Length: 337
Image (cartoon, rainbow, N blue to C red; front, top):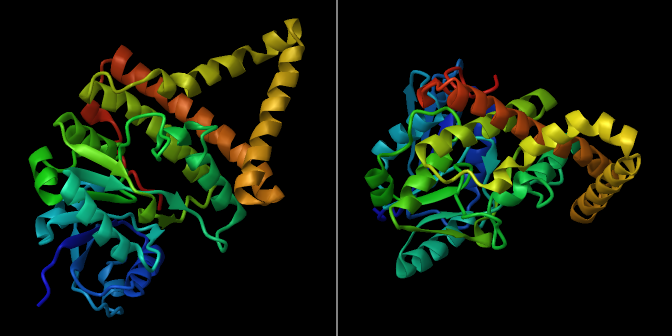
């Protein structure tokens, strides 16, 4: 039997269709050895083994079911089962390009030679995604929004891999104590723990993953709002990680509140706002080559920035002014059903 080098861990909650698409993409990989797949059902209404039992992969496939505890504890359950030297955390709303695992093994060779413990790569959309999903992908990856913070070769901040696409040495994962029981920001928390320990991270363009975004404005707003609130929680757990760059969306909220007054006294401000909007639409068109997606991206970028800013202000109020313990954050389910 081939040695397991990589364990692919997927937490799932009520996303049977997306899980099926992810597992089918794994079944199409150009390499069929050296890795295993562990699905952790976090209390779904329909058990995930109804999906895993219908699929046949060349590599070992395990399905573990537990009571709902959140994505972090679900990933910890999968990691405890894993036999690979490296762990790959993938969200159920993702799919792997056919060469992903093959590329990952090459990247791991380089990481081991260079002493890197934490890796990730870009997330992209696909032609068959909806206009809204493509526009959300733009908002979540654009340098004109907080997407520019997420990480790339030209990242504006230290690169912290997220769990839609995170490779980590199992020994480093165990040393950090796994994921904290947060329902949001738990992936950044783990990345910060590993990097604060003096270990290295790397953004790898070859580790590109297909990411199926939220399919509604409400779900997207909830996601970015929670991201903003999580940033305050993370700064309490890791002082100094909140940067001026992260505060820009909150400053945008204050700017919008003052905008009527500014326009009244300085009408030229309105022209600057229009110019900024047109600039974003143009940038989105260059990226997506679609006018419909570009105009939709103006709306999703506005939601991304204001949602994140409102979440950050809400987190500041709850956890700084009211001094709520960080365990108070995200007590309700993170997932949208």
